[in-house]
Length: 396
Image (cartoon, rainbow, N blue to C red):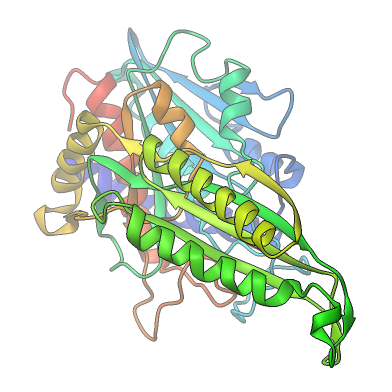
């Protein structure tokens, strides 16, 4: 059966690629993706599925009911793009200026839709139901939580397991990577304005210069990270933007900093935010500056359940072969809003390699990121295998 799933996924490759390229060419941002939603619904229209549409987003949950009653399993694919230009030169490159599918969500959506086709062909052997979650807003402001809050994911009772796949363009095509415990980090943001007193560049004693104070804060943050946190519960604090002034001979009145905070545990997340906020208040105060700051809590850590990782490993080895499964030794410090789903239900997020066959692979969020479409059947088959482990009397 395992090899049959891969063969059937390969037979669906033209469908998968066509949908992926359509979505890639017309990327949409945020929670409202009318064209992408329409493409998804069109791809599913000939299947016997129950559709539930989000009332606050473009999210869709399509439910496949099997021939017999039983538990439910949920499979998720995100649909939104990024606000950035595309420089791939692909014939199906973005037709929307300043928008690109640079994180593979076009592939996630297409693989999930094809998995719905594959499993629909096996609905007579399904005892239970499969819920296909097509989610907007992963890149912000977050689409998983609104769909949870609307009750779309557990309208007929909680799913027994939940799974998501994410492409990794720097991992060998067709490889599956996963781990138990944290696999992705929490993400928070602090924005601060340090307000001093402007003046002439030749007379700093008559001003309160915010620039050296901002530099001092940046250095202190790195000392906080390396001296107050256990290396085995790591955190990252990156000052992604520091901006001040207009020209060389003017001491500016203020300096601005935008800082991203990444962490893997609840305790480290709280202590990191408190520590950075303390430095941002006390160091400028010591120099006579005033500070305004805003802390924005983002996604929590994405934490895989042991049962979820075991299921991913079993399905990957059965469908793709032993050599195609990689147990990740450490988490990655990116963030994902599938974390909210895993806080509610057992399961796992896994990565699927999609590195190009030739040339240097560009990472996600690069304007030159490309995916190896030959990896897609592995993703389609893995989605199907994970579902059948829950709802089939004869699981893979």
